[in-house]
Each structure stands twice: as C-alpha cells, then as structure tokens.
Image (cartoon, rainbow, N blue to C red):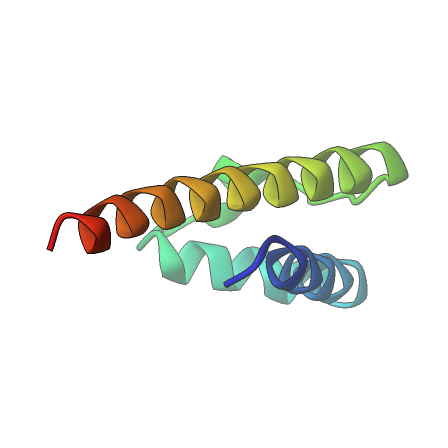
Length: 80
C-alpha cells in the first residue's frame, strides 16, 4: 500500500467516524474485544487539527515503511 493509498483509507475512516460516531465506537470495541468501549474511547470527536495531524502521521509512516521495504528488497535481490 502506498502512502497516498493509506491517506485515502485514513480519510475514509475519518468520514465514517464523523457520520456514525456511535457505531464507530462499537466497531472499535468489537475489534479490541471490549465489553464497554465507551469507557475506553469516550466520545469520538473529529477535529480539523486532529484529522490533519493523523493524516500526516499515516502518510509519513507509510512512506518510510515503503522506503525501508524497498531498500531491504533491493539489497536482497542484488545479493542473489
């Protein structure tokens, strides 16, 4: 997955949380096997600052991971 694709998935998830916050909390509870996800996650609020910060984080992390993967792959191929 490219950094741009990860950013698109992050944006889609953010939109899902904006449209259906209660159901999003329930889904996270199911994902983490929680009996009371509201106690852990509280109320989810999406802010512009939080969205942009999270988007930048996801894109940078994915870019770095893709670069590391490509570097390791290319070194492995050269040694064969």
